[in-house]
Length: 209
Image (cartoon, rainbow, N blue to C red; front, side, top):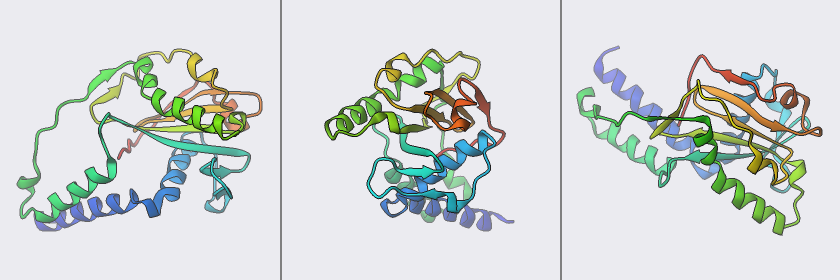
């Protein structure tokens, strides 16, 4: 593969990512996060086992799981805008050297600091769903962390998610670029979540957006 072929490949990848992040692909994107979780937990699954609810929440239903999926991003980041600009940058390049740029090295953060990134979305959902009379105890929260400015120190311990436990969700799981963790799962949560409670699974192939 010469430079021009590789440049075309990079451009295609950026265009595919941009399409994947469109509103039209929202459910497919949420299902993909669920599949990442299941893969890490060694739960066999087939596409026909996933479905969308007649009325949200939840976003994705899988067997007895009611997944409510949300993305955790650095403040001010918008993935669709980011990848749209990146696709245009790659389309405009004539050589690979034009794509080279320096990125600041992500700072290492503790598991406790990472969990703090979940707070704004979880508080908002708990408040909005409570006002709508939705039973939080029927929902399995699933967060996908896509942080560009920071990365998890995998040697740091996860603190008890006490603040989020009080909100009343049935379970809360976290998917990162190279790890998965079930933060809590109550008695009514699916077995595959309860059986992996408090266990960090490291992934061989890191994937982020």
